Length: 162
Image 1 (cartoon, helix red, strand yellow):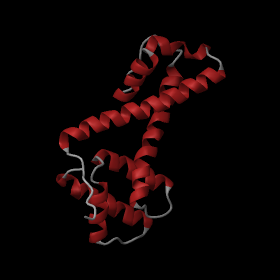
Image 2 (cartoon, helix red, strand yellow; image 1 turned 180 degrees about the vertical axis):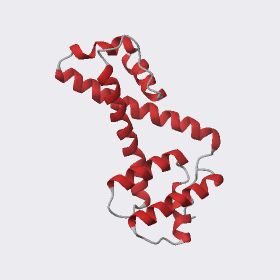
Image 3 (cartoon, one colour; image 1 turned 90 degrees about the vertical axis):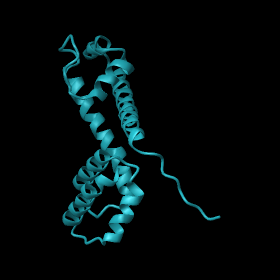
């Protein structure tokens, strides 16, 4: 996140406070921000949405970090469901609006032509392809986010005792 994202981050924290009925000090919000500022505001938004739908208690910094990964897995499963549904019906790649899905089909499966015969496979091969799709989706998704982040920020350095 960048300094201009702090206001949006504070709004997300206020949303968590409201939904989990917990008051958090300004100092604690700054602490959360300092420990999570290596994430993009989009990652934070996705993680907060995921946490609101899955958690019963106010999340820790670790919970938010974990949610960024779990929310990507959720996106991957939704993308799989979308392409699996039309896999044997279309002779061309459907317009998913998701560049990650398109990368997975193209790079991990060799293109739509190799994926569209999907309905003819046995259940074991389908399950292996689903696993491969999910792993590739998470890899490509994280790679694209990393590339976007590298342009805007330099890596954070930890301070240790001398």
